Image (cartoon, rainbow, N blue to C red; front, side):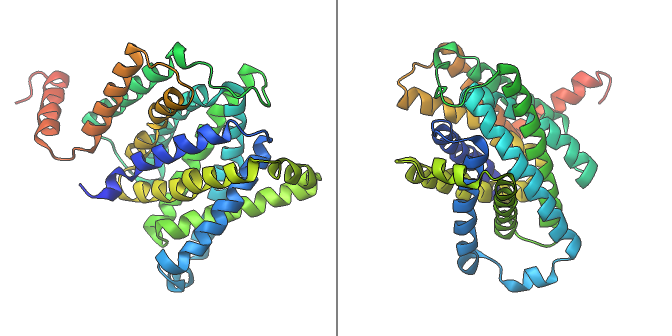
Length: 319
């Protein structure tokens, strides 16, 4: 197994860390999104001369791919991440991350429709185990007090925003994979998407007259440093790894790995907020880990044996 095939798990760790910090910052969701896009966009662009594939890939990329990247950045990051930040402000990161488990099903649909990616029965079983385990983790009531108490809203709005964010993010990553297959590598795609979202967010703030207020929120004492840390870990590294994963494996498999974010979030809440992890949550974590392990064991004896059992169960008269 190559590291690219498990990059989604590393992205989940990064997003859990970033989400934990973002949820405790006293700034509006749109301002936070613009701030983290600005930091991550600069870092990604600075990384291109050192880790990128050179100007030739941009020169050879068709305009249709560039247009798709713009669409992906606007839908997946500018709109999707703003909705996600507002959701975690209302629900808290633990509950908001529950709704990110909708991303793999959305991604499976987009993967089938846009990329002709088909999932085997064993993959569906592994995804079900992972998402069931994650659901057990996030239902742990002992970890319920992870909301910051800042910028709260109606629970119903938080839920709908979380669902909408999952749809936008899965749409964005699906479009990105189309471009990565066609012309551009993961780092270039990451830099382009974040830069588009940064420019788009800045234009919206300028036209709405919100830029001075957002600037004031982002420059409050203690906020810039935490935004930089969260953006570096959660966005700069996280989005780069997510694109590496999406290119290396099937879209639904990659997003299932990334959906492990709530498991890592529970560990952060338990450590930094000193909350105990219940037995059901521990069992859920083990179940999620088992599901991801099964998902990634391509061609192993265990997977082949399980596929044989599934075929036997589905078609009892099959040889």
